[in-house]
Length: 384
Image (cartoon, rainbow, N blue to C red; front, side):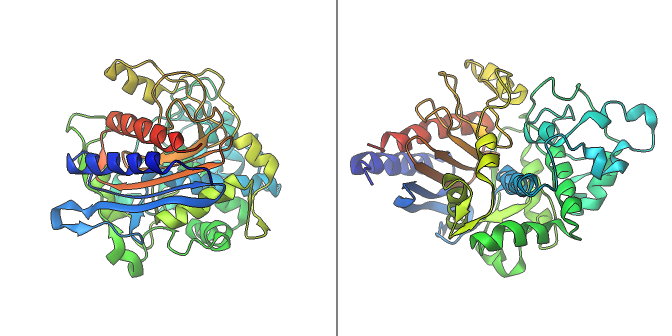
């Protein structure tokens, strides 16, 4: 499969050194080429405080990587004619207007394309209109969003949305397919067809003993406080439906998921997503627009500001030398998704290379970008 064993060892050694110096606690990793696994490893601790070692079947709360699953439901709906990129949120969720007509300004302009590309103009907040202990009931979140104002003209700026866009998208696809529960829709249309036996929205009780706890290592005055993330240890329950942050999965299941897109929507003989939809999803849709969130992180670090580089839901590598999760040496159409300070996968279509990385110990997001830039470069350097 044309992988350099010395370079693979270098990648492992760097991860081990990171863990030993306390940058994060542990990792499950897969690096594959042409669909064949070249390196799979479990390193460090699932929970450093108790000494519990990382195991291959550990179940991670994957945070915003959950959005990739919600995006995939939208891709299926697009390919099956149940939704269009121009479908407005209010076409399916009329109560999104809210009860106050003065707060409904611009809500009628937000469509599926805006949600997928983080250009909806809704606030970039981790709280979708409710406190964290109320996140798990999607119907309550949708009701609360009726009272949340649009802050920018839809389509005019790119600001990574931690919660609101995908809460709305999840409800749109649920209604488009006529399911009572979003979690059942995801299970039947994505997880079961792909054989993702350890993946769910929510954390089934049967997997709780394998779950990796969220332990956050960020400054108290950072963009997110530790409790903003660690509270999800309690709130991602068996019944919780959070299309933006509530997914749980294993390294092997995420690899199967990534393989679906590397193979242009086909896996195991089934065509789950239309190749034309994947082509658009992995093509640049946001031009040279910056991503307000990561531009701010870059400014604080004294880095060159990166372009937003979004397709339809997927983050793209793009070109240039600005720091980004996939590093500057992956091919420009390398695509993937990530979760705050901890999880990432990407596929480099030019090199036919897949990288999956799930870590325990949630890092500061600037440190996380620096880590993944380094490790993504080491991963792509192993391809010869």
